[in-house]
Image (cartoon, rainbow, N blue to C red):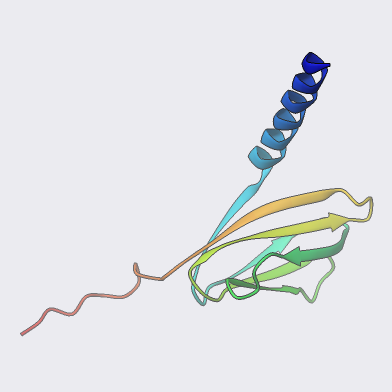
Length: 104
């Protein structure tokens, strides 16, 4: 009985590791927008709408992502066959484009 439970636990950990490793990563700055294309998009969900705003695009399969505040969240999309894709959305403060002004 104990070996059976151990086997089930190991299989569950393997599946979780496979799903987590398959997530795609999208990096955004606060205020930045990216358009993502998902074939045969049926529905979507965003984990934390305070971190990233998500909208269906004007064309079929387009998803518009906008960074709202620094943090991380998850975007899940489903296609017509209910197959899902998971995306890790990482939003950072935009520090690269701001030039430092020297003090006089």
